[in-house]
Length: 68
Image (tube, rainbow, N blue to C red; front, top):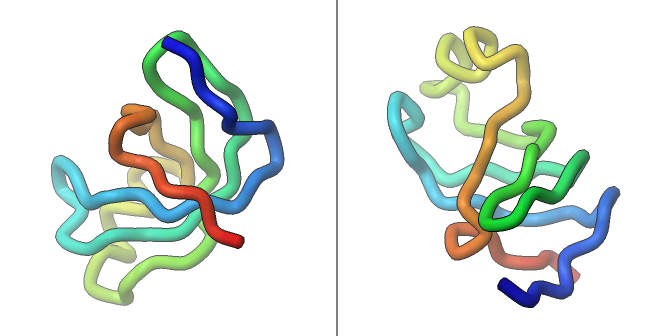
């Protein structure tokens, strides 16, 4: 899959799994169809899940949007 994401880029990710809200993060590593995202901004309601994930998540590239 061709993508134009870069490491360090700030992105908005769709909610998934135990996260009830979308979140903002920074790309740490890019895989073939997904990326490792460090979670930077999230809804307080998701704090327990974010801490369980150690503030990182693997997110499908289709669920990521760049923030300008």
